[in-house]
Image 1 (cartoon, rainbow, N blue to C red):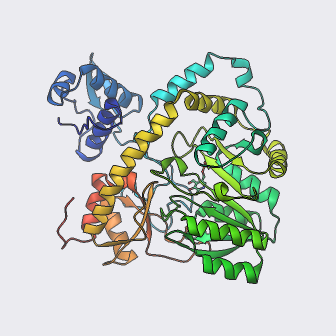
Image 2: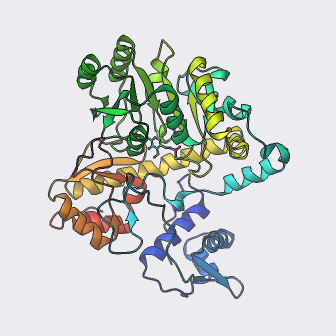
Image 3: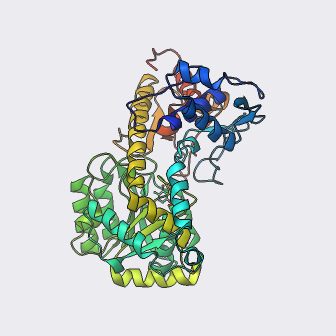
Length: 462
Ligand SMILES: Cc1ncc(COP(=O)(O)O)c(C=O)c1O
């Protein structure tokens, strides 16, 4: 059994063995009960230590993908399919199509595949935290959030050129709670706000829920369409503007400096509240400009999160904003949730302080960069049009030049691929041929078969 191990990669070898075995389980047509080659053979053929192979197999036993019987022999478990990410009810994936297979490959998924999750550092941090003051871990939290975590968040903001003092930062249960608090505290039913199209579907649902009307402006390569924004501000006088600045969901595009400067000038001139959602910041390679960093009037409300990199179940995000805004938001946070989880916040603070989080995101960026290059090549070979070639993040926004959505859907069904929704990224539910492609899913053999099938007559380099 030959495994794909890259010794130059930052991803730990054990994790690479896990990934290779998962790929083999999913695509090798292996029957439940199949015995894996002996550990010593796998180790010898791939120039690995037996200890690494055993550790990788044991992780797969823990995930329920392998069984361990009779000493060190490993067998394919009776249910060998890895658990896939949950599919959200509408916006983030499932709409008209459900694949013929029971468990389709979610090409447009909103996060990293489960097999990418590195749990060692997390487990270590959980142990560390549980050795400290156990009692305080299970109390209500401080309203603004754990002070040590907020200090780490301030350091992160400084690295992005965003200045924030201690009382200008509060923690939230992910960016989702941050957006919810902002909408219910700073807006009221009947207000209108500017949103990007295409854009983040759950934000549209949230705004609908609170009776806020949306004015959509196109998302361009370097951010929102400034001419459209200016026209809207003059005519419709919206209360606020939501922007997902970097590696935007779903287009993957990032805010350019000129657009950012002009946007702020317009916001100041028209008294519009700017809410900058930057949840993909840590998946960015290279520099990037933030509205909150250029904001001379210190009025931008900035949202961040650790869901995309560390864990979407720990639920830790944050808001950085002027003190007057933070004190309103924290009041509503306490009324609606009695604060956040000291346990989750302590685990994250521990990972940030030890540097383990920094190394983890560096490895993720490296893997994503490699997968993004391959994805863009596959799309080119298959004659797909891309909205832009992102330099970071998870997404590429693309459509086939040759085939319409119905034809693409038919290929997806045959290949066991679940596509992103045709309407979710539009605030007004307009149907589109464009698809959100998550590069961490696109290099899987199942996804490659799908891309090849959409353009069978072209020479393929992948
Ligand atoms: C643009 C954007 N904002 C916010 C969120 C929500 O993040 P969290 O999981 O931290 O609540 C997401 C998640 O997909 C997102 O894409």
